[in-house]
Image: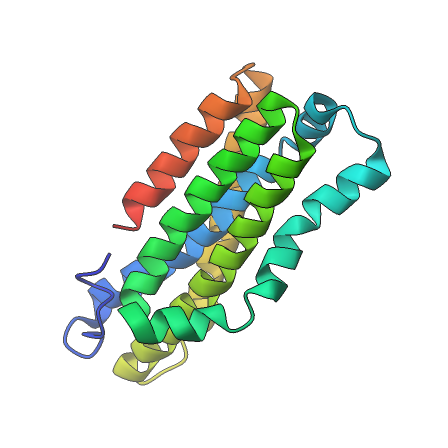
Length: 187
């Protein structure tokens, strides 16, 4: 993605638009795939609903704690790399959460979700920044269509998670494959 997502939106608007929309899509697809299996995660952890609610709040907590991180990361490595590497960050963090669930450790799940939430904050800022650059290159509003990419990605991720659960695919294998595909698409 770095080739099409490196600030050359004015020179390559179509390629940049596709790359930005793909960033939105993977940003929705990654967490939605695990979300579809939350009932199983709760069962693997052996916790009650109230405690599980606190564990899954880790995603939002990670995003809140990372309040200043997106700006720092974007200035340090640039917007394009922030989106791509942020997607890898989210993918690895969600694999950690899946591993924690498989191991029966709510604290590892919490840590994985919090790290994923922090990575999500970085990707959100980067993908929206790039989306605005693409809009400027086109000279018209396009950001809504890129946000639609997020919705499509979330629906696809949820469907993949549901199908993996129905097929009896172990959570760790499912999340490793799905995260790997999403991370590969961001490079």
